[in-house]
Length: 162
Image 1 (cartoon, rainbow, N blue to C red):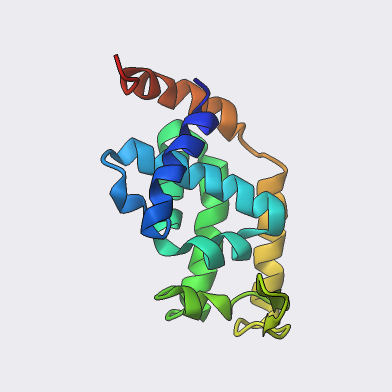
Image 2 (cartoon, rainbow, N blue to C red):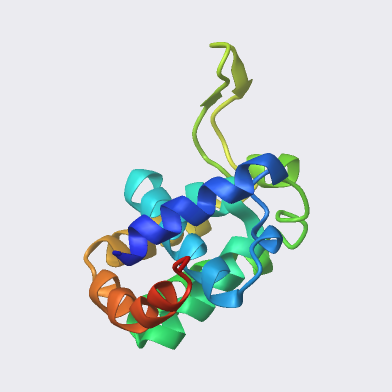
């Protein structure tokens, strides 16, 4: 099984628990779910979207996963994004409501109403730098998909029911 397919299946287990990775019994499971969501969210809207939607728990596991698989350039990118967030919005990650205000764009709720007007609590220069780093991530400085497959495949295989 491919790592991202395994991650998707594991992610579904977190849904009844508001996406908390803590419900997954093994660290490697938490890492691949965080890595999958990192890629999905950054490719869809950048690091600010990832962090706003997922928070510190996902960041920590994604960073750990990237370093474990040898994707050090990619890990440095997200670590730099997180340093900027921690420096300029130290309380910005305590709750999903706090993180909401990091996003610079308008946020529309599922009911079609505006949940947040455009604008971020972060300085414009920080938002700009995080977007630059997000584009660096999108250029795939490491083939983290291939690296993740090689690293996590034995764990995924060993976890299959017999």
